[in-house]
Image 1 (tube, rainbow, N blue to C red):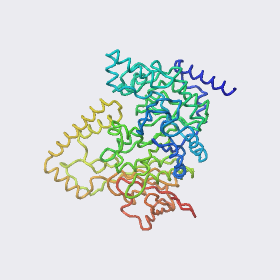
Image 2 (image 1 turned 90 degrees about the vertical axis):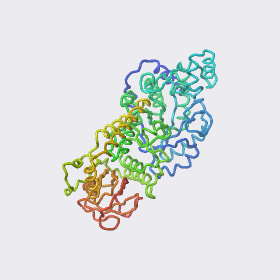
Image 3 (image 1 turned 30 degrees about the vertical axis):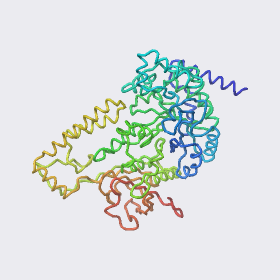
Image 4 (image 1 turned 180 degrees about the vertical axis):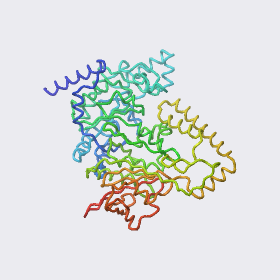
Length: 561
């Protein structure tokens, strides 16, 4: 009886919280969040059934995962499409990926292995009952509007039309402005109000998950839920499960969209994701952004939104066949900052017959086990040879230390195209993004026509110069984890030599190391100079074009994979 009365009190607090004007985060909430166990590496079991995830737990432990994120567990529309899981029908039932009992068995297995199970909860909306065009028609046709309202009355157990916001078309800028809270996503998401019936059913869903053993929660479409409502959900979870891990999907690179949630929940770091993608899609690759030195963000190179959502895949995503994609994951996994969310398809990326992401996961696990220091990021650019010919009428070369050394300076047209593409990558507004990308394409074509119309003398000089020196200089990016190991990434399209490896490791590596992607030994002396590379003297060709190496300190009598 005591527990029932306590839960009743929490329910009253939950209902009161969403009907009270939003206040700043309370001290008690901050204290509760301090108890949360934050995973380092989360495996996204995207659209996988509970029993399938349970059977893969041993493999996940071997790769160093300490969290596994499930797709939404509630009863949703039928079918096996991934997006169907994000169209709830009844939050009081667990159905579609397995039963409540199967979920409990999975959670029990994960608890034995020290893995946090993270549930994906969809509280912003219910399933689509009519498409955008139908709702637009209904605004002018009273009888048809009543038919659509009747669908809301009958489709969802325990709810009716009064539990939904009046239809509001949410497209374009409305995804980011004040209309994002009450608008119907894409003009068709059945957008929920925070009514008593809605909150009680959501509370019941959270209770079912917690009773099954779920220890983590991801809130889908969080930026479309009023912060005071989200805060009430978070406070309720922390009362029921003080060590719960909670993060919010805030699908935007704009810091202002994340600001209301800072201090009481982690958020998805789309700013880093988009920034890295944009840097890697430049030619040559721009210097990638630094990984944010924060503990409240969830980092990734790709997630299901940047892959499955067509607009995001086109403007913000990596193609799975992009040879730079494995290097991006290695760069992220090599450092210990934030929580990394791994998309399952990317685990198995192949580079030259090897598995860089597998190796990077092992590297991350081992560096954590050894308590390796966070270390530092070092970048080295190959210097221009002093014997290059000079010609006052020839193309101007960039000075050493700038991005893309050895390349002719870009024309204003190319610069404008790059800047427009960067800005397009930073906006969620589809109409604006399309305009920017079209303008960028026009600038690029104009610049290419202007370049091809250069004088024969200048073009001939550049062709002669290219024969004497490559267009692109070598560029190495290293994540150093003290003396324990390092990730070395080659951002250029040419091989980098032993001298550059010594420069980028900055004397931090001493002794014997094992390279764990391509499996060979490397030896440094006490001053950080290379003694051997793969069992022989250091070579001119050490790090291949747009590829990565992972060097791990070898322990006596122990071989690290």
